[in-house]
Length: 413
Image 1 (cartoon, one colour):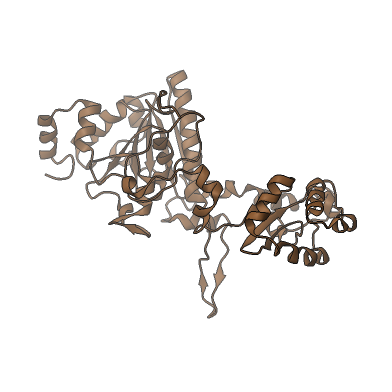
Image 2 (image 1 turned 90 degrees about the horizontal axis):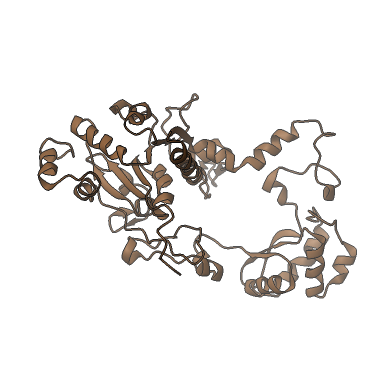
């Protein structure tokens, strides 16, 4: 790989005011080489103490979400600090308010204030429920956006107590992804037109949007059955929406292998035929050839009983290798714990090591062919870069920095 090219976002400067998980919106930008300056209150962002695990005194959430960023502290109750913030914005492309909307405006640092200083500024506020609606000011954490969006169902233990089941978080990750994507669109247009913009992201909105297929399917099913039907392979009978309707599948289903679980996805007739030929069971194809496309052999328990012992004859790796060579879709069924041992994972993810980054972490998942993205620096301590940022970006010398420090701009008179 070559490092001859600058990082993809070299020359893009972001001023970030964030608390907790929404800081992920600029992690993607930092991973691609943007200069992200995290402006923290004197006490710092308490993300360093949130959730688990805690790695040598810092949360994994902080180590991952704030990697590659610089930290400065400013006491925005102090007019000197407010002016420093404005001076930084004058040099920047983006301001991110990753907390309750309006927090910066209350300090005289809202979009209307900042565009007077820098007309090209792209201002993005990301919050739990966005800037409007009855939940606008409702305190929340990441799980809330997924329960709101209908993604996480309540579970009950043996004593009848309701609890949060294990689940993959969606909103806290999707919100930052959509936000970062939109920020770059805003910067592209601002550099072309000279005019910035104000955008806002609700992590709850992002969670709902990521699950659009289920919610839109339910909306479709509200229409008459002669207008919206099921699939041709199901004789046009409506099946349960989304992944719930996959419980009844047979050719598209999970099976126990000799040493784990695999997923077969032979809903296309061609793939199903290839599978049957490979396992020496063309009788299964002749009896149940299926439709050309999208046929899961729904509710065919007889076929499912035939397939169950077949899959137990081989290891997961053997099934994956066969699918690869004989052209029928197979997939491993991994867990968050063992995925790091999967050879595909090991090929695609060159982990950032804990020796340099505080924890072993996944890198940005998009690869630039024949290029190597810059490795981010370790997540900063509170105010670690205050003096350096103000020197490098604003040209403050040691005397000016000391004077501002004495006036309490950094919250430490």
